[in-house]
Image 1 (tube, rainbow, N blue to C red):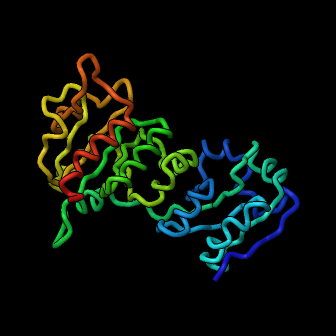
Image 2: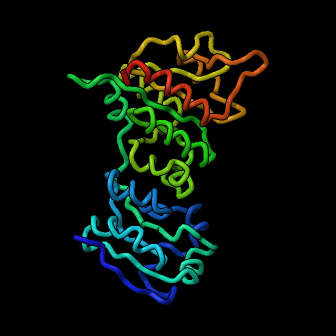
Image 3: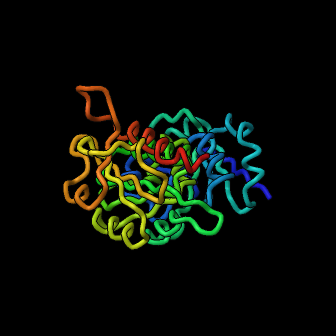
Length: 274
């Protein structure tokens, strides 16, 4: 069991086609596939994720560094090994990490099942979900997933406007957490609230207008809803949820959404971690 190395000296090899013009393909999608970039992310994908590796593209000097990962992959996974110049020409820009993987997304998760899982069962305690509404910045989405992994969130729900967690940059910013933390997409923010209500999971709207503070909430199965920086959560979402704020010094009322998610998750999962 080991990925088989394919030495390639030309960008014309058909196996390299999924990696060509990478930035442009990031925008239009890859029909059920995604690109993972960098050694750290590859190790997460190969060892901790349920998602499958379709192929690898490696700069020649990086092969030894990931030899243990190659040995862990099925022997039908090709690892295309190229010089730096060919890698740059294929992807369309100078890429210094020298490690790319083509992954398979798998079937989308059911939001209702993900929400129901936060209820806990038997000896499994209730969990905390994150709900993202209108987050279109890939750095923020990647950071939220990294925080979700760090504090043991049960999963992440996304509305239709929130960007793809399996976009290459989001995966990289998440340090691979987007490949591990379960997520499911809802048709809208209202549909997300319907799913949470049906699963009896409390919706918590993070907003500077909240009358309660996040650190005062008792442990319970809940979903922390986060909106985009600037507009925040829509009023209709706040109206259907429990409005909660992060207490701050006078004169300040907002944080970067990634920072806010880390603080809120730390407080919401404190008792559960104990």
